Image 1 (cartoon, rainbow, N blue to C red):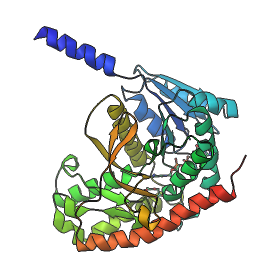
Image 2: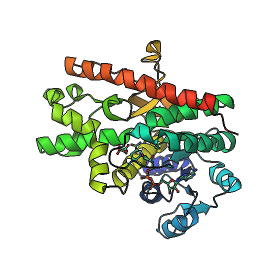
Image 3: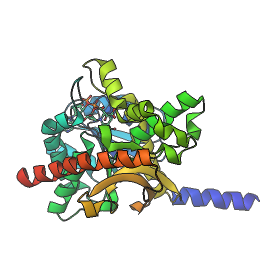
Image 4: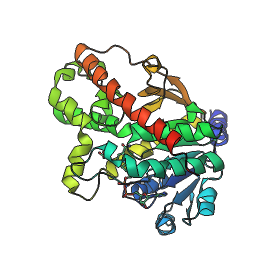
Length: 335
Ligand SMILES: NC(=O)C1=CN([C@@H]2O[C@H](COP(=O)(O)OP(=O)(O)OC[C@H]3O[C@@H](n4cnc5c(N)ncnc54)[C@H](O)[C@@H]3O)[C@@H](O)[C@H]2O)C=CC1
Ligand SMILES: O=C([O-])CC(=O)C(=O)O
């Protein structure tokens, strides 16, 4: 009995990987709470915080939290960025500008496309093996931008590039639990498509409450939940705290999968075969994660007539968003 417990403990200790996690944009509204949550994750052994301003300060602050991982902030220089990235297993990118009221996520493209392109280049050079999690909007376009950058350098691995759509799943679960008076931990809602407006498609027909797929108000709230926060913040940005929670959840899922846990499934925006025949290279569905990143992309499964209409509306916008990201890198390869 005791021997088997000791053996089990020895196994779990040796199965644990050392995990360096880097956050690019670590001093921002998302970056700070995300970095704090990563500091609380016992699977993270080293935390590298980079920003064009304020990285070392945030790192000094978080480094006093008494968990075991080491935390280091890096100078806003190319060599600082390279150092931050070197040896990283996971890189999260929340760098870039957030929305103000009246803007769509696509309105952020002109500013954020080049920020993400340049950071992706640095990742391709210094941490090509890392799992790369893109938070910066518009996610539907910034993920294809990263893929193009990696392809141009011959280091693209579609199993390791993820658009973080976890916040849509978090919101759907919470909104349903509010309506039904349930615990959100029991409300697992699959959300597919992309991460903006009508490209966000919640599949309530697959949940505990299939009838909710005809609740247009709820569907709209999941699709435009980000707008609620943008409006409430009144010019001071968009979701940061709930996003940090969602980003930390996605990073934790990858860390657990890397540690050998089976059956780790999260919806995430990845290169996907599901709609490639319609020219749509990236799509979010449930994805089983493994030590190398994407293990298995799940099909969308059975959906009802309401959801079928939502998917059709999603595909049109998504195709344009993806094409815009690809064209940007082809036309603006940068240095
Ligand atoms: N995927 C999702 O579900 C969500 C995505 N977002 C997006 O996340 C992004 C960040 O949002 P916030 O943190 O609220 O913005 P913020 O403005 O508070 O923080 C952004 C940070 O990025 C830094 N930064 C800018 N350029 C950089 C570069 N080249 N290298 C490193 N750092 C750089 C800035 O100095 C700043 O600290 C926005 O694009 C926003 O739309 C926000 C919420 C949810
Ligand atoms: O709405 C925004 O601009 C930020 C975001 O992506 C979200 O909250 O889902």
